[in-house]
Image (cartoon, rainbow, N blue to C red; front, side):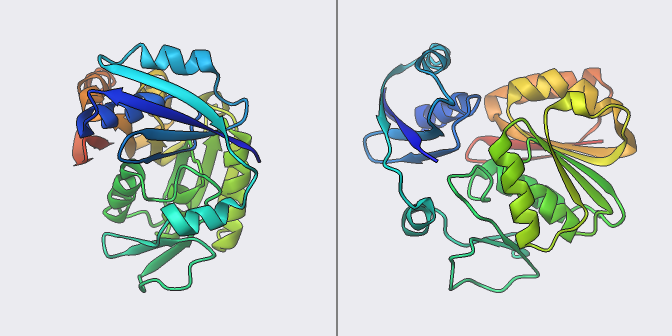
Amino acid sequence: MKYTKAIFSLSPDNETNREILVAYLSQLDFESFDETTDEVNAFFPVDKVTTNDIRACLSEVSFQVDFSEEEMPDINWNEEWEKNYFQPLLINNQVLIRAPFHKEYPKAQYEIVIEPNMAFGTGNHETTSLMMEHLSEINLEGQTVLDMGCGTGILGIYASMLGAESVTAIDIDNWSFEATVENSRLNGISNLEASIGDAQLLGERRFDVILANIQKNIILQDIEKYVSVLNEGGLLLVSGFYENDLEDILGRASELLLTKIEIKERNKWIACAFQ
């Protein structure tokens, strides 16, 4: 698969503005971000994001951002991730996330193997690791789990390892569907069913735990549907948004009579648990 790199230069360039920029860009179909001393880079499959999409997104920020695009050579992305990005990650001293090509890594109670391929969902992003920390603290034995916006399938795979009876994983992106199926196979997960689509696929199915690591606008758009298919006493875990968006999420959750259980934060990214 060929990728395009979008290169962003900020003024003023500081940590806060970079985090805000990435939060807004995460609303588009970028699959990965990285940073250098001078710029923020975002990667996406050719034709997945348009110049107009990017400009509309940048119009929402309050600081100056210049950007350019560069088509990436068709290279072995596993090798690039191994050299530059994706390193084995231990979360909560409980679950290890690694790629098939990693040879040295610590031992852990749970081990998840993820084929990265420029994926969002290797655990290295704060929102993914925060969601996994939430999952580590929940009794999932015998629970039915829904993973919306499943990406690589990492959250659903971990839920299955923690004892979930069944996992339904949904994403609008075909690549994410294929990645979830492949990563489930790599990890020996047989009770995860992946589908391509959005919240309209849910119908009348019911779940004990719903995971939605997407982004603010989609959460606000679909949270009422999530609540409608959540069993009484069930848990809704949401992430993918910045701390500035928390008030909107909490307000909508309150309207739907959800009770806030816990909020986790890291580098101004948020993950919330509701009942």
